[in-house]
Image (cartoon, rainbow, N blue to C red; front, side, top):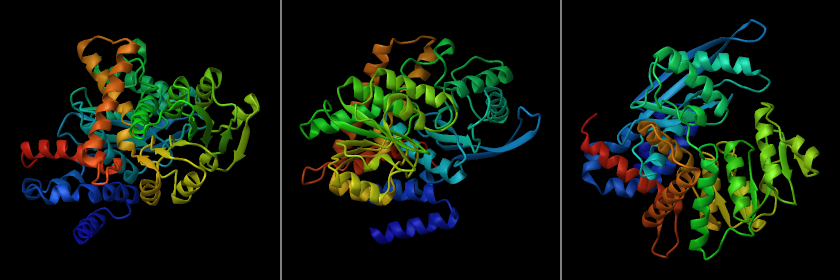
Length: 445
């Protein structure tokens, strides 16, 4: 099996040189689903894995816009429509200097399996730009979003491709993008999710990724005969994902002690409360990408240039960006008594960190744990189609149910002979089978 996987990966790398993040994401999946693939002649004859690793369509375009000084600036935009076997392409837009084709291909590939796990009819896609909002005015951000959507609108639609937000794309950016789409296409449809409540957005959507990861963690803890109440928790990041996780963890009685940014991390021994969680939104709105002001405001400790994984905690939720937690970080967490790592950002842990965590603690992969965001995006699509909106209680209950179903799928496919659950294996196989069967049924397309 190892020889076959190596041959597969060498062929992939030959076709996609330099796409390191994409190769990492594919290899993690291939290693866990190969037995299922190899044992199923219909998958092999249809070359399902090979097709899954090739986007159905990739768009790359220039995004010219004018800054407040009247100067022309130029960014690069992308949309990777990866797989539509089970529904229209669905996945976020990321505006961040780290955005490359490799990053978006890994995200779109992961999204395909994540969306499959939600049980909702959504395919996988991802897009974005290398635009950096740091230090930009609202008007500059609006002009950039309008220019970006002027090109993107040619390729998306409510039944074709429904983008959402991601890093650097929150409610403000979605509003600007939606306004430009509506102006150009002269139609009011649910073409974007994460919209404001006033124009078709779903309640609970901003919190959904963080909420969902906490619900998933609750089920993991229950398997170990534990509960979340009283647990000491480290979070990274300070955007919507971290904010949502902090909100739900605090509500359930856990003690959140860290958040982080590119400038370092905060250690707040008193734990987060409603005021501190609300302040996270204020930090996000400044576009300055720093968390140090939190320490000044609330008297917490700030560790410049450090990551929160050195703190002593029971649970760790990477909520920021890909590969933010490496093997040394995982070792330090485990040495300090951490028993659970819940990957809440997309591919938040390096491959080495994942392998170490699987062996030494309970580890949840992002495609399962962070599926709450796209799940509520799917619920927003349903509400838009019905011209109807559910209450916060209804959406939260549906989200909790979806995360319960995802956990059950991971247990079904990931439980070994020794009774130990490999959540990575369970998530990958569970997501793979549904997409693979749909692809076989639809023929050579």
